[in-house]
Amino acid sequence: MDKALRRPVIAGNWKMNNTPEQTKALIDALKPLVADADCDVVVCTPYIDLYAALDAAAGSNIKVGAENCHWAAKGAFTGEVSAEMLKAIGVPYVIIGHSERRQYFGETDLTVRDRTRAAVDNGLKVILCVGEVLEERQLGITDEIVRKQTKVALDGIKEEELASIIIAYEPVWAIGTGLTATPAQANEVCAVIRALIAELYSKDAADHIVIQYGGSMNDGNAADLLAQYDVDGGLIGGASLVAEKFAKIVEAASK
Ligand code: PEP
Image 1 (cartoon, rainbow, N blue to C red):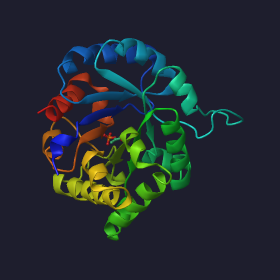
Image 2: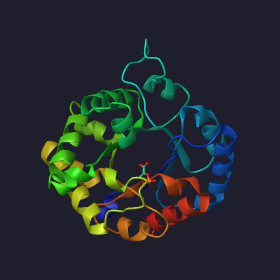
Image 3: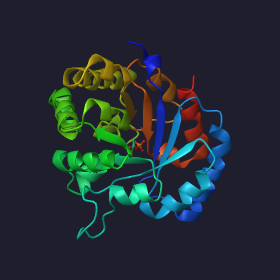
């Protein structure tokens, strides 16, 4: 296996932050800082900011993503946005199954599976989030939980569709808490996910799939996390809201 087979992806998850005007300003600040990146750079914004983000990022190496999408193409789903709608405005990436969606908005492994299917059907690249809560880690069932979440989410996804999937391992206890998994802990679970991909698909699929770590990754700890063999990038919340910090993480991934 060769880590070089996988191009790192550094993605910002802006969560519920920034107006369209602030979006433009942040992307404008980021553009020159990441222009020479040797990794993929993505910023995922609230729906309301997507047009501004696409406009500000046009012509640069920054790609834009949404933070969720619905499984249906259209219909009576007040407040939701479909994958088809994201595709229609030219959004290439979407986060699915983020722990905050699971925790606060009733997202389940099955809805994550259905949203993933819709996103892939519409040609979007999915950043599929999985990860254990603290109690599960303390009970020693992290691998089991992460394997189950990944397996259900990928149910029905064919090997040739895996190029559209990035998996983000995000221990829930590390998200927005300032607690980061150690590089060894992050690598261990990313390796479990990679082994599952080999089991479900093939060794070749496992060698090529991008698996990110997320959970309080910042400009200080990114280099050590990203140096791990099975960690191919990061999904970054808080630190993605500051252009200089996010750019330093991109720089660490580019080495
Ligand atoms: C996230 O929202 O996916 C995340 C990892 O957040 P933070 O970096 O703030 O922990």
